[in-house]
Image (tube, rainbow, N blue to C red; front, top):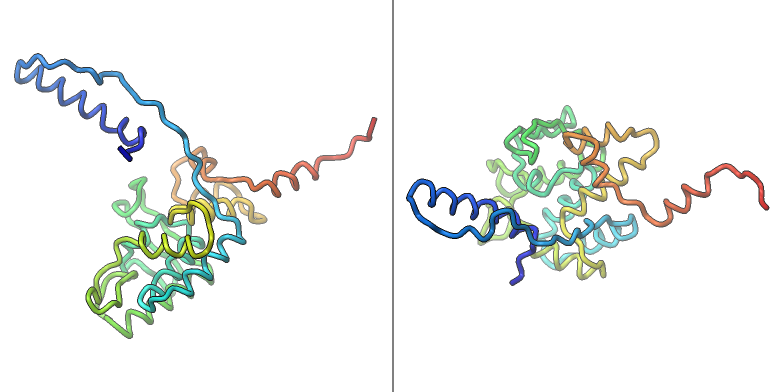
Length: 239
């Protein structure tokens, strides 16, 4: 109960392979009822925030009751939106891989989902977010290796490994329906693709996708953009 069919489908081949191994290697005679079986999956479209919603979210995270949460959550959101990095890529980021002079973040192959090294460019907003995070480091724990680190006394200097709790509250306080940290990446890529002069191949490279098809799956079209698009069709007269 509570486990999605998509998750179960990932486990079924492992269970089937385990049964097959036992039958072949141990001479067992176990039935294999899951071989070739898959549960139906409901494809749930990932959420993409509108700019109005993103502004509400930022207002909410900046108004967090805890100053310790405000030390990292607003800049987590800013960095996620402006770099298209995944949550794990940001939370596992070390200062030695942040090039403030070069305005880049280096993601090693072991840091990325695609297992490919990636150089993330920093725009002004992302750069300033990292400067603020560096000041938090200098004021509290100058020896820490992590970019996102707790300042709360009971876990002072400990790496922030999850933003689930404060994120959930911030989303609720902002009055936004279902939204996860991964939505920052979807929103970033969508806005990047629609930015003037940015080729989809460039957006794909920034996102670290191995092919354009993956990038297309991250692009969401707002109703207003669809109306704007058809309004640009040439006029051919009326009947």
